[in-house]
Image 1: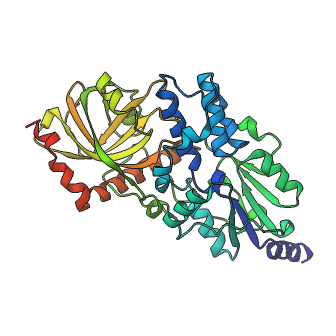
Image 2 (image 1 turned 30 degrees about the vertical axis):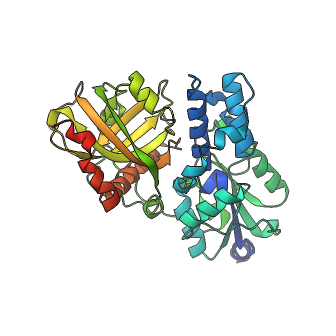
Image 3 (image 1 turned 90 degrees about the horizontal axis):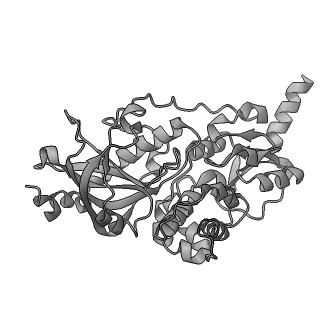
Length: 382
């Protein structure tokens, strides 16, 4: 029929998909905001996230300068804030759903390309880490009428729509939805795109993880293989203190019991140069001081819940028979896995936690990491 031929014609015409790298594919923003949090924390302040939308309108360097300046009430140079990020760029993670989306579009016969304004050095590192799936950068693409564009920047989305692209506006996790008023084809996350509307075959997403989580099993996420990039710290960070009550979300909401380390002056001093994020290493706990356990640790403010205070939440990879509140705990941080990040939904957070644990468990089995289970730091317990 005529309508059927019309659908086929439109499907054939839209042969290219252009995806914004920073706002849709790779979470560079999480790294930069983590650097901003660390920077203002060195002044005894908490980052004012009310100014976070500035990341939608500026380069990462300029946005970092603006959000830190507004928080501290003084002029801050973006370059000073981002100096710390350079050594962690290799840890940048795909946004949840990005890998599956790119692979699906390729299987459907689309030419998938990316656009980016990230600095060339960061881009080079990211491409080396994610070369198996990350689309090539093509700034010269000039066929809007034949293209679909996925964009997370509201202003750019509107401009692209006016230029003739079929635009799908994908909300950047953590950004207020009112930033996206009047944006074309707005969706809150990649897994909410109804592809058949755009004459693209439907993408079937994996079933969300059940809660409470069973972290003794390995994650089967399609993103997992691209989650394994970690940055080894120049020297391990050794922390010790008392386990104190946390917010109760780990065990009650997620089924992931965590040990929250008290923020003593000594701990605060050692964390002064630690970027907020997820780390892995080894731990011992007072209730069984003769044993050392694999551990994954979250340091920071947990942007998904926006904690009022900086916390350290350690998940020890062992089933304990009793509560370890008020016990003495020792933590040895070896590697930085990812920056703390906001997520579009609780399902996405749960998926990230499962991948964090699976990857950490695997990497701690490697010789260079396993030997630290016998570090003298733990011998003091025995």
